Length: 477
Image (cartoon, rainbow, N blue to C red):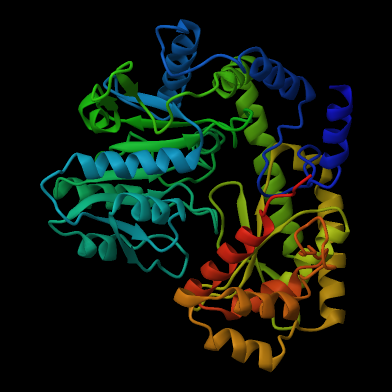
């Protein structure tokens, strides 16, 4: 047993750090060791509890209703609001779409209206539940266009979506106008606040200018907010709130059509560990309202300092003034963004590359945490060095023959041979018989990302699915 734990610690040394404020995607760090400890201990204490039956584990029911109540208070919810704790933002989004679809069984081919900046989880929901996504271009500031959203709604629309904020650029959509247009047509309006929902209310309290987006906006029927992001709870917990019980009811599933117990589920899961819920409850109780306000103050101070520092680097610019804690950076023609990401990684910082889309260039994404604040000078120094190195290295080029090969591929019929050829061209093929299934993950990804950036969206999806399939082949012992 001890040996296995030692092996785990050794394996973990290759992972991105989850503490220290230097990983600006995937993890959200309060910078408070005691809060992390409390969350971990609560998860461990409830790891064996089962959230399937709230009557069997009433403490889980109590914690869930208290967590939902706290979220309702934070998001200006009316007394009629109800909510459910889910495993994360994607499950909350899936349930919001499924509930909207099932509320209209008479619509054979339902649709949902999305700004093009809506999270990809909505496309996953569309794929799973057969709800057609109607994508509406956003404005030059990357916010949804309310008039275009309204024009896209029709008799088949079951859901309209706005973001608070959108992940890629950190801006809040004009929810008031979008929700009003949806309400006028009797359509549900969901606000995806998975990443901003626990920090934007404090931003408003601190006097920052944030567009209205909560249940205080008439016409907003549901909101998703993740607790494992800026509530700094252990992964994975999210809350899906509906304005009334009637709006939530299609979310529930029950089946007595078998000889076992009658299945009754509020989410997509049946058996689920009580650990994440207990961890979220314990962290929320420990931090309290004042603790979250202090963390919000810290994270927004970090955001402001980073924005000011970026302004001192001529090759960089902020894509759109962020309303929240997410910053997207663009580079000028002398500086390759994918190389900047590699150079930052070499300096101990993880920033996330974002591919070009719909005529907009590739960008560099930063999800800023409270723990980043003490390290902002180091971050800006590393960023300036990374940019200088990227300028010196020059643009990343893809071999014309490889580019032509990618252009000729059909994403619907990508073969193993096609994929093998691209792996070889990208330098991702390791020694034959290697433990990694012949794949060698490079330390620098700029050339790989440049290849992916050349591909169409459909081709990029096909390539990455093939890569994931190859990467996750079993290791036999």
